[in-house]
Length: 416
Figure (cartoon, rainbow, N blue to C red):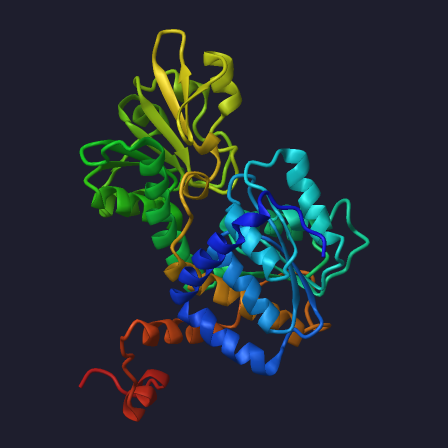
């Protein structure tokens, strides 16, 4: 078995963390039990480009239980947990990922999993899919899945351009993914990463959240819960007024730059904080990115203005401006929740990765019947994931009476 990881001797430590995460993932455990009996992915090779975390490791084991041959590479150079990579290799699953790998190694690892000629690919950010559609066009997988908003945006652009050549399940669009992973997962893990990197007090701080989609809303909620004064920057009027109704101030980036203590970008777009904003920021401003790619902060402009940075703490770099102001960047501007912390809790990734496993099964079940376009998992699978999670948490679900079902499907009854 080929693999490329940092430290194989960390496998025991990784196995313990993998086990702990697995205990918090009851929906995936339920799927694994069925998969062991039915083997719905028997003989299929699955190449996954995902964050190499304990939660992802449990997904890889679920795919193996389904009869697949999974292989894994990282979807971000800073998101790999080296002990988890070692634990998976010890389980016989090929992993190509090293925390802190350079760009050439990162893309080389993507090619390594594609070299296995996968039947199904799994993506987080669409880097693997992009290569599949550019330099590795000789490969023809049954289909692909996409985990995150940024990746879905890229893939929809490919579909609109007419270049998408495989069916893709937008796992991110499942309700049990984006309503929970994006909001509650990103909210908690992003604040966790900022606190670990800086150890600053959030209470009383002006926290600027750039972007108010599901992820931005979650970050704003958690920041306010920690006592922050939350300021939202948005380009969408509906989302902006939603932030106002949620109790936040909504300002332009220029105005927010002058009063913010902590800035968190969650847009999926490039250079949303750039030179003009750095020029206005106060001394000691901390910048973090919770979007998938590291282009949300225009770090090249910051380096031109301030020169090279210096590490002031683990995962926190300091730039000194010509006028003496200090601007601090968490996790090199990469995903702060994985670069400076451990990513989303297993409890919420249980939902997301159950969707990933079901998407792989659905692609195989519908092999040959799907067009090269973007699909969403059937609503009944979404509902089943939610039902199993609700039961695992010890809660009950009300059932409609026959009379209520009849009323909701009819039109004859009105005002008495």
